[in-house]
Image (cartoon, rainbow over all chains, first blue to last red; front, side, top):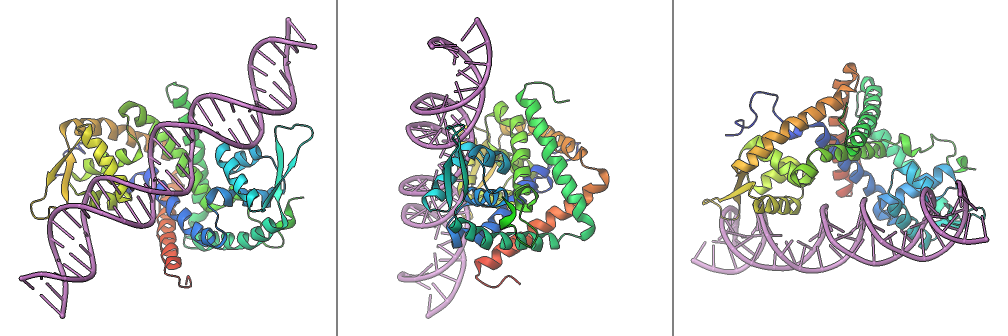
Length: 164
Length: 164
DNA sequence: TCAAATTAGTTTCTATCGCAACGATGGTCA
DNA sequence: TGACCATCGTTGCGATAGAAACTAATTTGA
């Protein structure tokens, strides 16, 4: 009943299909992680990323946050607006360029960051623990290559050119 | 100015943080893939998954599609509704249980599937090509372990129990 | 046997997403 | 200087997501 469509070539099985597997894995991991902070701090993924980015760099513009955390500028804008309302992030005008503003964690924001960062690292550590030590480096390399290559493919297609 | 929050332990760097890296990679890959079919067939990811699942199994219920493709039942419902409107998927009542229905590809749906599956496989092949051959198996194993483990962690947290 | 619980699938409702348009500012160059 | 273009960040809006409520059908078990 099924395989009449699969024909000669290697059949397309969703559960073995790389983009699908990546998506499922990323979603489940993301979901598991957010259970650690979402309820406790009442923030979502974008807010979490802004907090972590500012915790890492101390002070930066919304644009820089977007670049570093791979988020659309509207996502950054809304996440920052929420964190500002909650007094976790402060905004300081840049006198040299009034279009942008410098953002940084308030003391309350830093408190949350210091509370949240160790649990996040612990989570990642616990996850990686299940991967064979010998496989870990290979996994990291592969993830980087796949990210890089697919970005390039997407760019090629966007340009309308033949993917080389 | 930044690292005063990082303190003694290994600092949390977003770009090295596994859940973040997985998410970015999955998004870019998914995005690149959808450029191959989205414009040509006017379908999105959920419709693509339904097509592929039915192409693989021939005939199944909406619930089974949801389980196999890891999609919420409302997502399946809407994707199927769209494919039905476009005459790519047909519905046949199950006389033994009228709550559910058997879904399958129409000839037109099969045409699209046969056109789409090889490009998808080619895309995945081209992607995997960039990963060192020696790293590929390790990558697959790691992806499985991470998916499995994070599902378990999420379940543990949901139960309110201490993650063992 | 029939009331209560369960299940498949749809619909409603609300939240979030990202594109596009926008206002405000800054840069370029004739 | 001033007309034009680029950039930062916000907002309006249509599309999409998933939670919860719902309908209809089936199963359970007293």
